[in-house]
Image 1 (cartoon, each protein chain N blue to C red):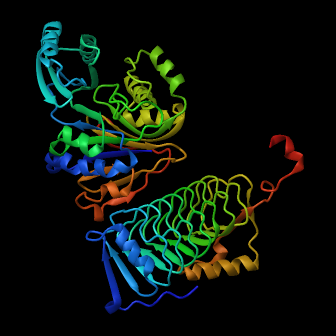
Image 2: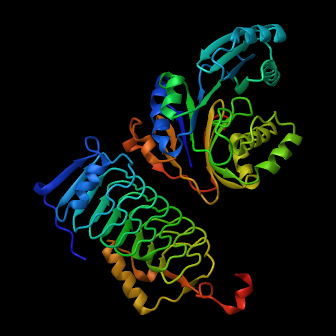
Length: 235
Length: 303
């Protein structure tokens, strides 16, 4: 992944949804291959900054609606507010930072890159995660990482009901309480390799003063997702 | 999919602007519900012993003066008629039972339907795009304390005026719903046995509204009635409900349908999506959050 460019005040490109259509703003961002863009007046609009395809920096100046930065590649998108349903859905690479809270299904099906939520994320955070990393500095709602296949979820606060239900190979790290574990999700020991990868993730997400040793690890018991001939009568 | 909206004003000075603030919330939710739209507005309370009915008749040529005479003679009260397109607000001034008055109205002509009854509530709902429905009833000009609205994308019963939301089955009570209930047929039969007023549609939300009215008749507050609903209503729901002086929100335990609340010192606002709330004054500094699943949020006296 290329490193996003460094912003300097004189090269900020300002886009304004009060004057420009969503299609114009998204078009400009999708064509960009470098630079720093600031989007004013997002007003909760859906599908903003979707399908970005270059190492640009995008700052959203307010709350965003559904599917912000969906399918993101290489770009770093920062929301100075909260994000609606499905932020960074199907992200491939790059970074998405939410300064406020994230609604349901944050980082759904994301393949790569990093999603950081400074506040809380609600239900189904990381549903069907396919390889991306998600760091939530607050808490996550119920059914988080439902059927997650690969990637890592780090939660500094608590997790709601049925964490990791029907989990495949994603790794979940939770610092606070887990209300309940979903089917086939179990607590697993923190070995050195896990402490190391978690410390790296915490550093990338700028979690100062938080140590990997404060977390518990959860993963799949692998009893559910393989086909078993014994169960043939139930299929 | 449907859109739901609510605005509860805490600051009296905003009351003249209720409709002006509320209508853009409703219209922004057109994408979620273009089939029909409706608004319950709480305004112009009538005297203690008077009753206010909102009555619908689809026929623009219907002779309302005949109904007014019929009510005056049948009930021995003064009747004031305030027409708003297909809906008329009838204020019955004198000692009168609201249920009896509503029954008398609906028996007069098969095309008549009582949309709401109480001291404060008025309900306006019609098929068509939300902007068009709002225009027909001059929603922007409405003053009042709170409003609850709905934009409908029907999934479960016919697109009709009667099947539009809000639903009201109790005095000054209204309910809007995004979702679908799976046990409404059984519950409807149970409620009929408990003497709940007649059902007018096959709609699931009407059953939920009747359920709340029944719980409140049993002495529960709106807040408590919604809590009871967590045990008795099966399915997907985000509800917004209004009473004469209260306002409440509840989502099902799975939180299947979206919901955003915003609160300032001046108001509490609800929208299915945040983008519906962005024109409210001071929204950039409001406390904005997503209500937790299976938690009742309520504001106001009797809520």
